[in-house]
Image (cartoon, one colour):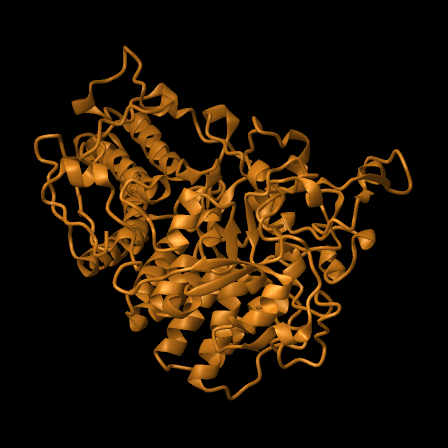
Length: 588
């Protein structure tokens, strides 16, 4: 994977909104012979280095050494985190204004915006020294990064201060701007900059903004703001521009292992979500890049992997999510004759095994069994390494460790067995993280068309491309708007799982009040269950349980969602304390 240049060699500055001057990492330790703050950037090279610093700033937002995109779904109905204040509070309506997870996005996205402004404010001063197309591209990429940062801030916090240039300590008391006005600002910005962005960056992989990414971001913001006409136009434009550049990547042959036991092999999606995927797959439109050479790495595999896989099992799918997967005939499991509760993982949407790790499967070279009846499990590493023709047996710490998976499942998506040798508490990984991909773009287009009640064959085509890639049957024709909406919501729930979008979907669809009130079901013991546990699968692909029966097989996590409060996170206490013009969100 191509490496970002060393940003620590140049001045990358900007005042962190309200909090502090940006001095907290190597990127901000200015060389003694570097340029003064007021003159940065003084030339094209410094402008590019400042731009790269802004890109890198986005990628530093994490929790438990896991990039934020792979954290967010684990505080929803589809994923579960190891219990603790940072991750239990968001799903029990008990966030506080000093909660670390709730504070981080505000601080880090405003840090990124400050870095954008540190370049953007003075960029006109060196315009005469830079070729017009290069100048316009640098300007456009910086404004794209700022637009993306605001798109995240408004979904997490609602109204936020809209800064269009650097602010100092004396003029930082900026009030919050209405969310709708910021959405309009983002949309207009992307209109203005899109023509100056390239269709691809042949020398920089997928870590920098392109014209496709700009229209996709515009489509996402428009969809979230219920501007469906614009969402259709922008997503359609992005799809058209993607021709010959972006497309879905077929899953490799390991898709045939879906529903099989560990002795048949290990499902593998690294050609899309692993090192190979981020370097080669045309599906990715924009990624966050990590590199040891820039001292920008993460350790998410350690937090995601099984105990036998040298991890600590911080994250995992819920039983609710596992039961959401359709049968291979395209019907929910409460309606399909192919579903057998005695063999619940057979004849299911292959993405269950491609994206999740469940009992009786293989993961990181080991048989995965959270049930204590499996005192030993198969170790396939002797076979993988070629030292034996059959697996050995090993003590099953995935069932006995006190900090084994808390949900009974793990995420296969977004980890790579290639990182197994270096997985440890002090490990570092350069595995990229996807931000925009073609599968989401197709679903953005389909949802905008459905919500606009502008239903034609292109809607079916967009959804079916995603389904057919997973060997799932095409949708039946002639579906109503409500039926297509249900089909679209299933695809977003399944295909985009653990991509960091579910939190936003639950709130914008208005279903968080149902989905996130009651119980999440967890199968930490890897128990079998009976068919009468599930009453039905509703129109949003949410399993409805017979609570009394379900508790016989599963443990529970009570979840609470308060309307009028939990749509947004609190403004950090430190910001409220420093800026008297800020108002707190309701309920905090």
